Length: 406
Image (cartoon, rainbow, N blue to C red; front, side):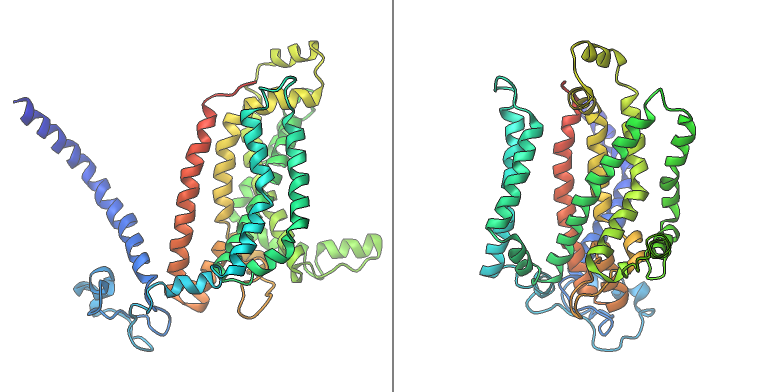
């Protein structure tokens, strides 16, 4: 009787979960498998239709199913097939990554960041074991200096130039990671400064400033239109150059035609869209810190900087770490701002991605402009693997939010 009741319970739970399981299979698992399969084919605008008699195409591609077969569009060429070798699309994206010169250049670049890894390890393991305790600020300063010195010694610029001569995937992903590394800390810093100011009880009109400073987050709902405003500001005859000419009699450059300045405009615009998220999260965390801690610190003679480093930052960490992880992932997938302002340009070479062509902009161009679906899906598969690993790592990192130590 108990065994039968257990089976009935399991069957009941399965029936309740069945709609969700079916939805996951249809909308998550099946598209993933289909994309992975198409990444192994030569599907593009010249080969849009499937050859339903080859491989798994007849099973996976909806255009081969009887209900859709008669509605398939007429192609401009032969049906798409598996490429030979199967990894050709991936090899085209990675280019010469696995040559000796590229691997050596990659190792040199990674070597420059070893001091930062060591600094993080020292702060976790030995900072509290040393008497007096070693300041984490000085550890990071020394690590950054060592990173710069190593960059000079190993010729970081030359190694990076060699690596950037590889396939599109390396160029686009490296540029996107650079965007995330610059944008996320600066957004956090702006949000932290504004949150500290708004948290002050001596600030008149705090409610007005809280509403006014939150406007960019509301404007992100129409990010494309607001990005066009930023584009107008930095055009050759835009707002900024007009101000430079009127006030300082200086003819401004064509900001969006230079790779470095165009990249900087994208970063600046996205910081403006994103800082309210950090500001609100940090402000809420600041208001949960007991004022008695600061009063006790003042009695002990701690200055503002010491209170910030020893009380404020450790106690807002549970709120900030998840926000940092979430913002990093969304920044990696940023599309609207970059596309609206520069469309991925300026172009550096005919066969290379543009200076602001981040991951999502590149994927959009490959799908809708070039219409190379095989390469686009191969690119999507590699990005999916990267984001999956990053998500696993973020779950490990956010365990630190279980508690905070002063």
